[in-house]
Amino acid sequence: MTSALGILFVPAVLFMVIVAPLWLIFHYVTLWKTQRNAGRADHGAFNAMSDTAHRLESRIAALEKLLDAEAPGWRSKAL
Image (cartoon, rainbow, N blue to C red):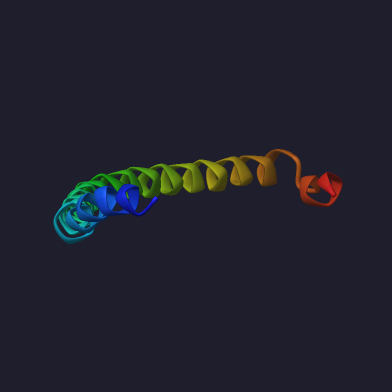
């Protein structure tokens, strides 16, 4: 039993000292790069959604003006 532990001890120590830290470093560097690129894409998507929301608000305002002119009591009937 002790020979099996001795055989696995050296690779385990090498893994923990060399491979694991490099693995973590490369993993987080990759995450940081993807988050930086995603931030730019998110900003563009946010601007597009904001423009769409403003256009929809102006459409709703125009529809409300038309409804106020055509059917003055429409707001109380909707509830």
